Length: 548
Ligand SMILES: Cc1cc2nc3c(=O)[nH]c(=O)nc-3n(C[C@H](O)[C@H](O)[C@H](O)COP(=O)(O)OP(=O)(O)OC[C@H]3O[C@@H](n4cnc5c(N)ncnc54)[C@H](O)[C@@H]3O)c2cc1C
Image (cartoon, rainbow, N blue to C red; front, top):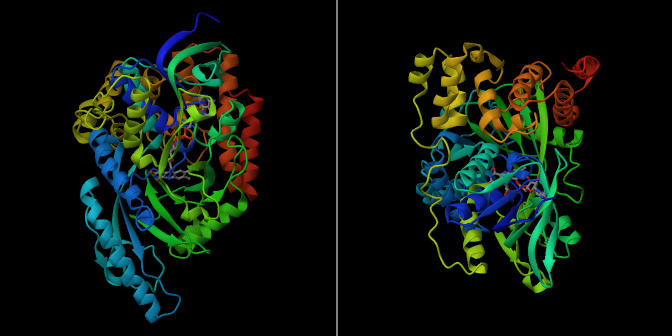
């Protein structure tokens, strides 16, 4: 262990809030260390629904949450235009009977008024106003809906790849001088009397360990905060909520569809890339956030909710069930749905830990504004005075000069579909990836046919995007998330990464095994019958061959 290095700020947690604060601090001239115990976005930020919406649900109880999220969504679209996609939702008017009751009609009218009020926020995020659809118009747009619906209202929203949003913030922080260490856990606080003066850390890949001294420490460890706080002598109150999503093997609709679960909770199915996503549950979660899996009950609950409007969903193959933990503010007595999505920055000075702040709650959609507010507080605690924030106007990496897909595909002789995916993920940097492919045409090969993922992108990511484990590719380019769960394509990607990072055969085997285990945790709850048997067999073959 060498001499401890000194920073202005050490940020714990490479979710969207930690990475966002690291970027903002670095852009305002502070020296920053960001520590993430797994990969960037391996917590809630990589497991969210990825909506940078206003959260229409919160409009009544938390109007300020809706307004902040809409305003920030507008800023995120500006700084990462390539990574944001438009996703209009339909809210169908459904009745069990052929003729709707008066009460149902009143409820639909109220919905129209409610959505109309949300329209007032749409200009903040560049969304379009809602529209009332007749039954005929609804079925013309979305023939997959069950018969007998009475019309719908539309709701314009934006989606984003949350994992890449974290990465881009971390890369931008690095470009502004921050040090970003992934797979590195903050093990304990360093104290000097009633002051926190830094953290001890341990690298979980190579076993290195050390200490970092800091003027201020930000705890942005999300769902891990309460436990981490307790073991370091501070309280971080939170009401964690488990959320499960399902991925289905194909697109079932052209639009997002808002459905009702059996208990009346709102849920949705939406098209995403080549698949559909169903989400989400929201249940209090007292367990270890490292040990979460979806249950068969949760899978059944979600499918039942969608089936009420999209009957064909039962014919779908569910390819994975993924979980995340919401980091909602603590409140006793409220149901999960009614919990506030507000955020707080806690100052632990009153607990004998001056210099330590914790970020709790909030939304992915408001991450930039949350980070700005937190950075303002850190500057205040460091006595640095106010320095202007620029994160709302400076593009994230790749967000400047996004290329035209057709023109790029024609110039490099690569299929438009694959280039569209590449430009979505990499923005301006897609040009560099394709230049790499021109230099070595073998890299134009698709590593994953389902995802249209080019070998060139895998190589480029291994070189430029802080990859330390094979499973990091899941969050960089969706490698291993398609129907095969990596069983078809992981070996090729693993060999490319191994070549770039200098892994020997033993390390390659271990990384493949790890990736397939991580994927298995998301696949096991959704497999049964022959599919389960087939996949068990393939896993055994992989293990038997050592995967190489
Ligand atoms: C199911 C679900 C759906 C959601 N959908 C949406 C949505 O559509 N729109 C929206 O706006 N919001 C949504 N959210 C909320 C949003 O995802 C969160 O508000 C946001 O991602 C929280 O980010 P974070 O950085 O605070 O936490 P996280 O992303 O959880 O990051 C915390 C990080 O800290 C790391 N860590 C833990 N302990 C340590 C340690 N000791 N040292 C170093 N690192 C450590 C973890 O590995 C983790 O990566 C959703 C959340 C869930 C769970």
